[in-house]
Image 1 (cartoon, rainbow, N blue to C red):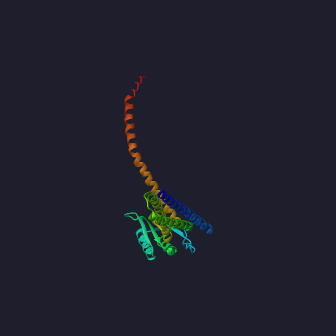
Image 2: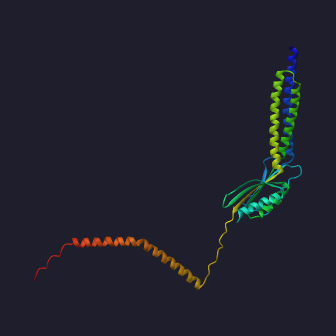
Length: 293
């Protein structure tokens, strides 16, 4: 009995030591990420550089190829105007596919095809060329390019994942050597916790790596409405005569319209006036006879 208690205490102590070592590995991974962020000033996660959308629309795409060893997420939004929205959307898909990219999502109006929004995923090396070719499919309305350096975030996730994986391996070895139920239960609970942390870190790292591996281009195509050209009015006697005649016709038409509106009221006023005059004549007293001289 005493030997069993000693064995349980030893295994519990080893379990706590493994958990503490895992947390220490996490702290060391965080410190390594901080050092990586300090080495690359101005590249903190979340920092982004974007072109001003209110300024003149750029006709070329800036060079966004990251430096060697850097992890950069690149996104762009491009707005076009075209007479045939459906044709531009089909041409855009062909351009991206030829460059090794793919169509991620599409949202287009049904029927008239007055507008469309397409989201593409393209390799970072072909990002600038694809964006330039898409901009030539119609009239550029707006363009914005953003870059986000996530090197520090990737280093932090990789360090935490390595620490959690090593801690899981040590706990699994202890679990295999456990000989009684209390030790098995305690080690199994900590092992499940560590394995869940490994899965979570793997998912977060996979999302960031997928964003780095493929740049995102959001293309919006709107219907181009033609604007009627502004013509200069002629000058001279004939032009003045023509404008005068048109003004006369307009005024005559307006007068005729007003007369047509007022005519029913004038007729009614005439009838009422005639009836009133007749009544007044009947009610007027007869003149007194003139005395004979």
